[in-house]
Length: 154
Image (cartoon, rainbow, N blue to C red; front, side):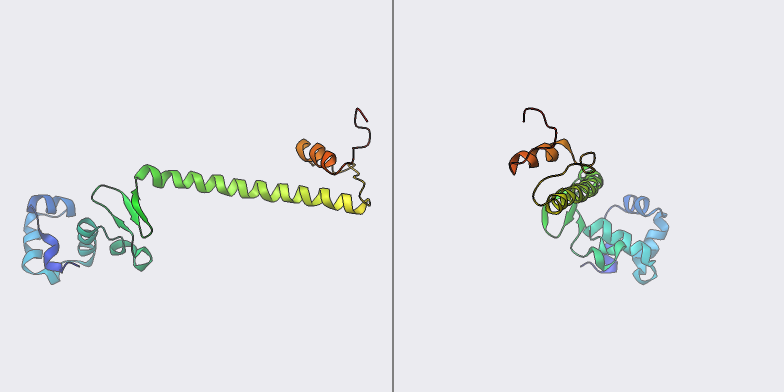
């Protein structure tokens, strides 16, 4: 970890421009590092060390920004580009939609099983037929050896 006085190394004009201060202010910080505002220290730590705890707190321990512009996580050594981080949002949205779909299909499957139990093994499709997908409706009937009432070819 760098000391406060170590944070200000490099070309003074570049460092001053990065911080949004004048070179005179930068010289004052170098002469008296304890006078440097905490926000400036955190920004410099982020720039030099890449440690996201500098601005995000301890919840970001182990995460850092590499000099290659990638975000590195504790268990992901390859780093994530900005595009990869952005795509995670869409992956999360897709996963949420798929969870809703799975829940819906489980409910429909439960309804189909319940109808079979109530009718003593005979599948009665009335009322469930509209809600059940065709694949389940036809597939389940054929798998268990029963046919829908009024199905063709029987």
